[in-house]
Length: 252
Image (cartoon, rainbow, N blue to C red):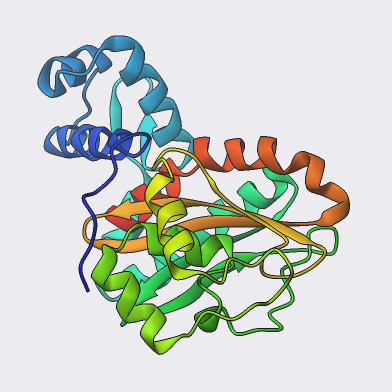
């Protein structure tokens, strides 16, 4: 599977976060924000917001003298045989918080072995998940999840996928022309959420943002019933801003 060059913003912040975590890990007895800034080269303002996010997610803790130490979440993620279970729990907690924050069902999707797969999601009575009336593996051309994953593949990767999953019209809004689809994918800015405005299912709108962690192809998505379509743009922007902790969990 061939990938397009990795997008930068907003996920360059994850690289900075990993740099901060590495620095704190080297100082077992704790390290001040001044020392962290000196060793990482990050501006003070940027570092302050980064440390706030890391504290909120439990990756670092601030002790009595104001120094920073590694938090319980990072300890759990590095605990050998339980690492996968700890990661899934951490991601599920983050998804649940994100669901409540955006008021929509949220999903993590990955492109694994040439297929679109929803690996985790968080929904609820007031935030129902999408009715998968057509297998997501066969609907990458129509869903926000699928299109977001396809944007991260090169042309050959996309063609390989569509050779196995032929484009089908699911609604009157579904793009069924490969050339038009690829043109829209190429024009999609990596920092702007991919939208699905009733292309997959009548009565549902969705948005997705890429999750860039190493060479993995993934995305974070949300869905809303059509009566809440007026909230889609704002919810998608919140999803974009809050994606960094999810990427960080995948990258650690």
